[in-house]
Length: 352
Image (cartoon, rainbow, N blue to C red; front, side):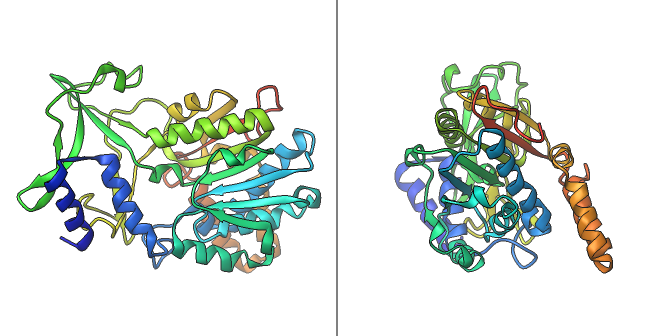
């Protein structure tokens, strides 16, 4: 056991088994606290690290939403989980096509990792005091129109897992078997009310994954957008209808790792339940989810790659390889999905 596993084991020994959500929270807090996990030297690669075009297109999406809703003077641009700041840097560069959008804007990066915050500060230093950082998204964001981006953020939020058995739904817990961390089912079935509607037809052994913090956050974002205007764009990997398979995974050095092996040394995540997110955001108008490939194609990603390739013929092959990775159904094109939130009665969200 590493040091964090020993701490988890001591807690379980003293207080009893913990939920998968609690384990994820502990493990991911330790994981993100002291490292930059992105890129070839890290554990995984995200779309903004693959190509500058991804961030540019999301930036232009925000500008189009702003334009469609009457070009408000005061606004706030927020990114949840900004990584190295790559997406925001590319988005802001693209937003310069509409200088009025950037006039008087406040940029907020929601980041809890000291290591990643430092990387963001270095990447975005030209924006100076226009940017501030905070550790969480809360109701204080509700005083003006909100333009929010979240790429591969919701997948890392902690989930609870419930397993269908002959005795009903039972929660999967993390416990101790001897001196090792292990999974076990709670001895008492959970109340039926704990399981979302539509999951009753799960087969025995089926798994229901619920992310309470994601649903609460989606509701809060939708409330602000509904009242103040603006729009939110969520891009992540996940499913758009109930899935009874387990999706919790650990990734280390670009490969899958044991979920309970060396907590804090690998990234824990789960597929996003987009149907649940859409339902939670129903105070506003929700579009999607749609496949990332469909979304990017509709907002002009191919045209942008054509422009870059014509200006840089020597890099054309590399550029088309980047595009393929973003939109190929065998790579990120189908598994990754996009969901948009805009006010009721507003023009449709671009790309949807």
